[in-house]
Image (tube, rainbow, N blue to C red; front, side, top):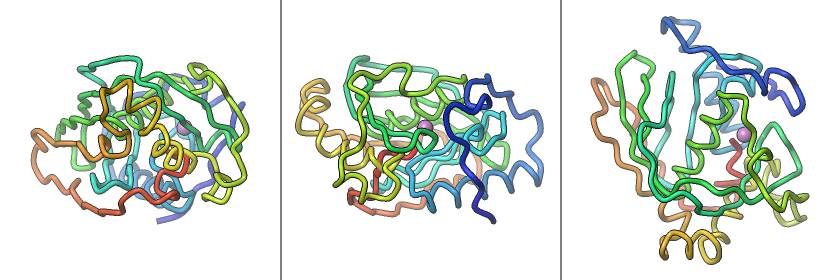
Length: 225
Ligand code: NI
C-alpha cells in the first residue's frame, strides 16, 4: 500500500465525469488499498478516485463512527429521502475551507465490492452525507458548488488534521445540535451516521470492520472526503 498525493482544486481531473470500472483486477484492488491508506493518513472520512488523479468511479468511506470501512466500485445512489438537511463539509481537495451543504438525510447506495460482488448500503445522517459528497466527486461536482457560507476553517478546526475533510467531524458534531438535528427531526448528525445498515452484502462481506471510534474531532475531521 502507498499513500498517494491528493490533487487539489482547481485540478481539472476533479471536474471530469469519472469512468465506470469495467474490470476489477489487481491494479484496481491496489488502487482501492492505496486510496484507503491515503484517506486514513490524511486523515479523512472519505476519498474518491479523482482526488488521487484517477478518473474512475471508486470511493472509500469510513465515517469513523463505528459503521466501518466501505470500498465501493461504481457506486450509485438508488434511493434517497428527506432532502435539505444542512451540515458542514470540508474536502481534502479544497484545504482550509468548509461550507454548509444541504443533503439527503438518508440514501441507499449500491455498487460493487472489491471482489466484484454487488453490495447495498443504507446510510443515514453523517454517513449518508459522506456518500453523497464522494459520489458527487465522481461526477465532477465539488461541495463548494452546493455550499453556502463557505469560510476558512477556524483555528480549533485547523488543529484537527488537515482541516479538509477532517473538518467535517467537528462540524458534524456541532451540526447535530443545530442545523442538522433540527432538520432531521432531532437525529444528531454524528449519531445518525452510525445508522448504517448493510442490506445484502452479497458474498464475502468483509466490509464490516466496526471500528467504534466514536466521534473524536479528528474523526470527521472535515469529513475528509
Ligand atoms: Ni471531497
